[in-house]
Image 1 (tube, rainbow, N blue to C red):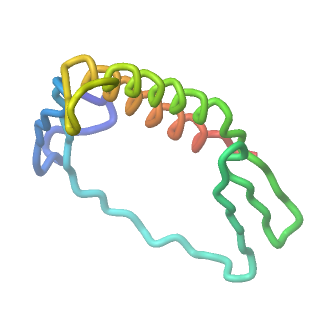
Image 2 (cartoon, rainbow, N blue to C red; image 1 turned 60 degrees about the horizontal axis):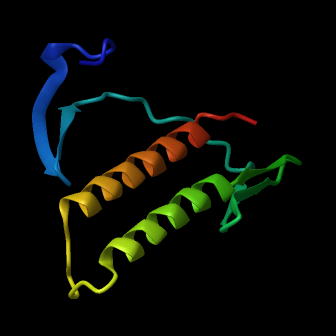
Amino acid sequence: MDSNLEFKEIREIRILPRNGCFYVEWVYELKADRPQLDQAKVLGIDHGVDNWLSCVSNVGTSFIIDGKHIKSKNQWYNKQVATIKESQPQGFWSKKLAGITEKRNRQMRDAVNMRSEISY
């Protein structure tokens, strides 16, 4: 249980089976104030492949988030899937495929969360 949540705030607990694993989702109500946005400041985001995100603002700042690491992980996954599914009927699925799919999904989620925590 996360240390920043209080039991009395939890509205629902979901247990989700996915690829041989179980995920627990804690649903709680969050009361947040609407942030005051400055309409004069804009950020343009371009989604790419090698450069995962290229961002430019109208206040003179820009940054690029490298996507080669994420692309490499996805290529490894696709190669493994192709090897396992070779000479198998269409729609074939196994525990090994479920395991590597779950691993790839965790890696992608982790990479996205780490990248979003970076401030430039």
